[in-house]
Image (cartoon, rainbow, N blue to C red):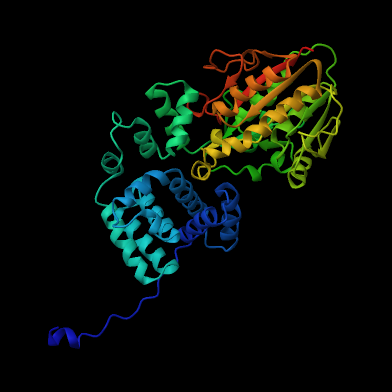
Amino acid sequence: MSEQARRRPPKPYRRPQKDPVRMLAFEALRAVDERDAYANLVLPPLLRKAREGGNFDGRDAALATELVYGTLRRQGTYDAIISACIDRPLREVDPPVLDVLALGAHQLLGTRIPTHAAVSASVELARVVLGDGRAKFVNAVLRKISAQDLDAWVAQVAPPYDKDPEDHLAVVHSHPRWVVSALWDSLGGGRAGIEELLAADNERPEVTLVARPGRSTTEELAAATETLPGRWSPYALRMAEGGEPGAIDAVRDGRAGVQDEGSQLVAIALANAPVDGSDARWLDGCAGPGGKAALLAALAAERGAALLASEKQPHRARLVERALAGNPGPYQVIAADGTRPPWRPGSFDRVLMDVPCSGLGALRRRPEARWRRRPDDLDSFAPLQRALLTEALSAVRVGGVVGYATCSPHLAETRVVVDDVLKKVGGAELIDARPLLPGVPALGEGPDVQLWPHLHGTDAMYLALLRRTA
């Protein structure tokens, strides 16, 4: 060391500066990883608390939301890129460090934030939450990532399509390989369709409102906030970006709600399916958290019918009670197990069974679910789905209709379940659901219906309608 260097005074220590937006995004990602939380449940209270602090405005909230959801949606792609920039297996990197790196990668590759700002902000976050030592590691990795744009990185880290199509799509579109394979099977083959579906899963979904009939109207909602018409449901409106549903009186009062249009269509189709004879008693056998039940109850009230909403979990039953409060017609909410029901066979004219499932149809809204689910999960859902559909067919009277629904397009949760139960139970037949979704295109060969994000702008809801014949 030279004499001049020895005489140079050391740089004073600079305390790292906390960036509230990136701190909030990091906190949300840690909750998702450590507690298996869902971002759509974790983020709103964090944003509300930050706003109440006084130094967090709408632009900050929008950026924090983009950082959290963008990082989760592109996690698979970013993991592959980070792996290419470090000298150890990804599993040997501490999860909090990976979260900071992924946040930085998203800012560099998935936003318009300038490179220098993305790197410096991420390193500053690392100093706050990880310490100076690991911040140096973050700095080195992000500088490597900043050397190329996303397209160049994907071309480098994704295997060629012609050698391994599923792995190529998994890296390019940030889905686990098994999910790519399952969705491809459900679509029926073809590269264009699966690419469009996977890309749609990575797009920010619209917030869709439902005006519950007899309680609210689309005109009232349109007057309360900036909206676009729904695509398919007569009760739907799509909110403009940045709109706040909780600021609308009808939503706060429960006369309207937030509900994906695919979910609305399932309830509407069941309500409009032809039945033979009476039409006075309806059942929602898996009613939590209450969106479909609230729409069904409103539709039932218009016809003088009563809805029984049953939900196994008491805390979810309370959510159903809240959703149905104020319904103009008769209804009842109970906590009961749909596989061991308290009602007598043949008690109902219409039955909806929206069964627990993998949730692969809602990956736009819950991007972390794609990394959390495993193929083995389908085996655990299968007996429950069959049992619930079997009991639904027992609950409906001869001439009545059952709607079997899932928020999953996986064949093992949709057609396979319906076919197995029909073979086992007997005395029931599939009816064509497509005419009950008027105006909705690309519904396939029927008689069941599969909706898709890339074709219909909805979650990937599945619906089969079955009539009891004996």
